[in-house]
Image (cartoon, rainbow, N blue to C red):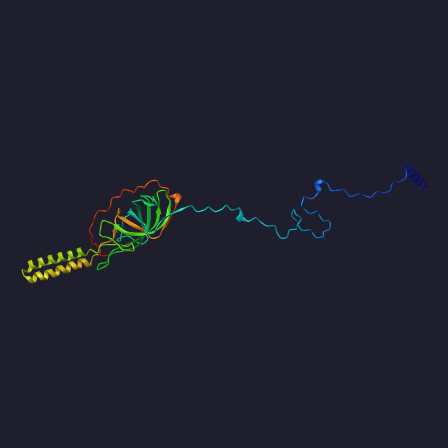
Length: 296
């Protein structure tokens, strides 16, 4: 034991006196370990308050970061182009493509027309001939057996130009060329003929025939009177048991429509260089009003 302590002292004496302990200096963090620019350094004390973020000027920000305004990123709305006005009261001549009659027409049934003549505004064609107009039946009234005429009412709702440009329309007929004696009132209703002349002729014919038959049968004036009365009654019955003439618009009938409300057309869609051309439809033949044999 004494030998060990002596050996240790000799070794220490040979090495020289021991240098005093140096304090440990803190090392700077490496570049890869430094916090990102603008980010707060880590706080070794978990209870210490975290400082608020600040902008480049050093001012602290409060509240959530503002979001982008979506309205600022939307493209600006297109400015409407120039318009061409077709004023209310404009007359448009039309030709009918599908026949219509109070005998079979019902409210809601479609009607199809075509323009016959170009409409011009300020020297420019805005509605060429050959444009299409569609609408529907709004009222269909059959003639009565004793009184009342056949009536048709319709409204025109759409205009389709030859370039397929379509606009809403509000128009009604002002007159109609149907080949018969139909008339049009101020509301655009098409009214059939009353056929009074034909009714009087029917009664007169049956009266005369009855008088002749009665005179031949009895060879007396009394027989003529009786026969005339019977013939008149028969003629009146024929009138009362049949309906008056139907209101009809055969295919090819011409109708003049009147615009009730002005329509606006996009100027860039009505750049027509010609007047257009309508279909060649044969007009309806002239016809006399005839009572319907079917009283129902």
